[in-house]
Image 1: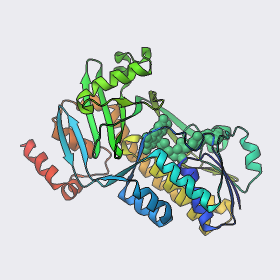
Image 2 (image 1 turned 45 degrees about the vertical axis):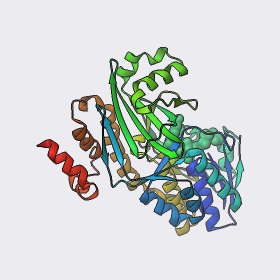
Image 3 (image 1 turned 90 degrees about the vertical axis):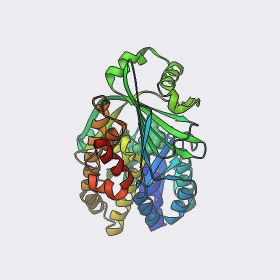
Image 4 (image 1 turned 60 degrees about the horizontal axis):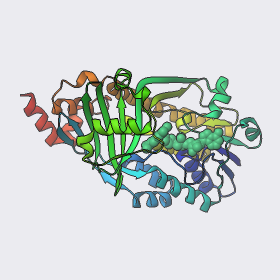
Length: 375
Ligand SMILES: Cc1cc2nc3c(=O)[nH]c(=O)nc-3n(C[C@H](O)[C@H](O)[C@H](O)COP(=O)(O)OP(=O)(O)OC[C@H]3O[C@@H](n4cnc5c(N)ncnc54)[C@H](O)[C@@H]3O)c2cc1C
């Protein structure tokens, strides 16, 4: 089969690896607009369950990924200077750049051709030249816009603003920190992803953003302002920018996932709010599901039909949980009157996926503390 892939992010690279592994005769070419070392973002997180899926799909890249991992089992909630730790949540973090390098190496070893610094505008020519065109070109997918009539995307720009920073302050565990100033409430999502660096994502609602005056600030001033809001948590460490900018979260859904020989994958197909740390995980698990569909049938139409039929319910379920989580953070201001332990409890149960009983089993010490504070 001849497969053209637009986008060398986790979705495109991982699908190429799995297809080439399944049949070395496939001719696979990835077109990636960036160079091999250019990337945005800091760390990415995976749950224990995702790691098991990655091991089953390709143990070689799994071994490389887990060698570089930072693992933890706690979520920490910081509110009014108190830190509440909730254990029993197994997660691991890795630098996005490291992950991409591992996947690029593995793909090239298997014989996948990667054409770096190659930005595709003429999607139709590429599609006519292959059996399968995979659109793994990210949240602002060119392919999705080019064939908007066929995919019928639903794009929802959310009101909250967020910005991805890094820092050398180490957050051992997924740490959710809330700070207030005269402008409003700021929430930080942070975690360590290598021995020296943490991801530090800051989010606020549009009123807070305007009152803080970010529309008038340059990058340095923004970085200093946000650093000041979280000064206590950063403990003297600076925030690190990687061309970091305020963005509005874009919620992506598509009413149709494929047509003829074109299929969307990863962020091009769907997004889930970063508060449940799942963009990279979903992109790679999409790749597993699509590659499995081609194991069942080499007929493109049959394989794509099977992919959408089996994967859509999983994604819809995930997006529903992520939506609840996103809404919680959009309304974070209304929870600030809660005590730290109460806030931690509502946060842990916000997506509707974790119940009191789950917490009792996974984090009994936390539930005992919660109950004793409730009187
Ligand atoms: C600014 C920003 C920072 C992020 N940082 C993090 C983070 O630190 N941690 C985390 O977990 N998640 C992060 N995410 C989310 C995460 O990147 C995605 O959920 C995940 O990478 C999805 O994988 P993907 O392969 O579908 O898309 P992407 O990783 O976005 O990959 C798409 C690829 O397609 C390429 N491309 C796009 N258009 C074209 C074209 N026309 N021609 C050729 N190539 C093209 C892009 O250069 C890119 O490499 C971030 C997202 C954004 C927008």
